[in-house]
Amino acid sequence: MSVSIVSGWLPVVVEVLAVLALLAALLVRPRHRWRRIGTGVVVALAVTAVAAAVIRFATPVSADVPWTAFGWGFLFVLSVWAAVTGWSEGRWPRRAAAVVAVVLTLLATLGPVDRQTGAFPTIGRLVTLDPEDVVPDAQLQQIRSEVAATGRLPSQGVVTQVVIPAPASHFATRPAYLYLPPAWFARVTPHLPTLILLPGEPGSAADWTSDGDADTTADAFALAHHGVAPIIVMPDPNGRATVDSECVNSRFGNAETYLVQDVPAYARSELHAASGPGSMAIGGLSAGGTCSVVLALRHPDLFPTFASFSGFAAPQYQETSRSETVDILFGGSTQAYDAHDPTVLMKQRRFTGLAGWFEVGDQDAEPLAAARTLAPAAHAAGIATCLLVRPGGHDFDLWSQALSDSFPWIAWRLGLTGEPAHEPATCATP
Image 1 (tube, rainbow, N blue to C red):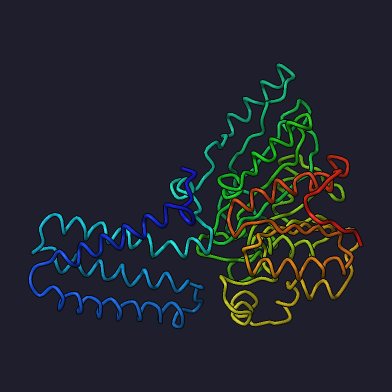
Image 2: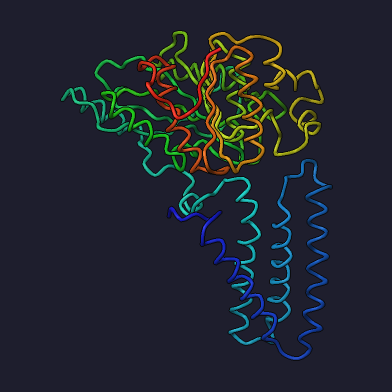
C-alpha cells in the first residue's frame, strides 16, 4: 500500500505494459491493418487536439495539465478506438489486449497530473482517502473513563473526525480531523496550545494524518514529553473537492473568516485549548503553506507562528495566472489581491514577534523560488525566520519530514518546551 504511484518502478511498468498492450491490440488485426491504424491515429489526434484546446483555452479556469498527459491521452483515445472498431471481428486475445490497453493508457494519462498535484502519491492514498484509525466519540469517552479510573494517560494520542460549526463565516465545509494528545485525556483537561494544519489543493483535511504522518510525529513528541503535545486541528479550507479557496473570502465562501474565527473558537470552546497570546500556530503544505503565510501576516496576533512547507509566493487559483486569480478570488480587485500578497504585506509593516518556518524540496522549482524570496523578505520585515531546503520534490515524503523537522521548534514557539538546542534549518532572528 505504500508503493509510490508517481515515481519509482510502478509508473514505468504501467507505461511499458500500456504500450505493449496497445501494439498487440493494433497489430493483431485482420485485413487492412495499416489503413485502419492510420484512421485510428487521425481520429485520436483530432480528439486529443480538441480536448487540449478546451482544457487550455476554452474553460473558464484551465488547469496546468502537463503536456505528457496529452501524449498519453492520445494513446488512450487510440486504444478506445482500437477496442471499439475491432471488437466484433477480433478474437479473445486481441479483445483482452484492447481492454488492457484502454485501462493502462488511462492510468498513464492520469499519472502526470497526479505527479504534478501530489494528490495520490501511493496506492494506499488512492485506495483510502481517510485516516485508518479514526476514533469515534464513544471511544473518546471510554478513554476518558479509563484515565479517570486509573490515572494513567493513554500511550498514544488519537485522531477523530468532527464537523466544526461556522457561525461567523457560514462557510459550507467538509469534516475536519483532530489530533488529541495523551495529556488531553487527563482527569483535568489541560489548556494545551493548538496547531492548525492545512492541506494542499487538490486535497482534503485527512491528508495530514493519512499521508502526512502528523499523528505519528505528534505521538513521538508526546512520548518524549510525558504525553504533552499540541492539539492539532486539520480543517477543510475549501468546502468542496472542486474548489480552491486559497483561504480567502471569495465567491466560494468565507474561508478566511472560517479559519480565523470559527476554527479557533471551536478549539478553545470544545477542546479546552489555550487562549493566551502565542497559543496558536498555523502551518500547511503546498497551497496550505501559502495560506499559512498569508493568514499569519494578516492575523499576527492570532498566529504569531507559522510554517510553510512547499508553499507558493502568493495566492494562486488552481495554478492560473495572477490576473485570473484576481478575477476569480478577488472580484477583479488588485487592491484586495495585494492585501493577501505576502511580499506586499511584508513591505508595508514590520512584524515584531512573528516567526516563520519555510521548508521545501530542492527539486520543487516554483516553491523553492518562493521560499528563497519569502524567507529573506520575512527576515527583513522583522520576522524570526527558519529556512530549510531538503532533497526532494512536491510530495508527502517531503511534507511529513518537514513537519517532523519543525515540530520541536513549533512546540517551543507554542510554549510547551524550551528552545531546541539544535535545528536542522538555518534560523535567524532580526
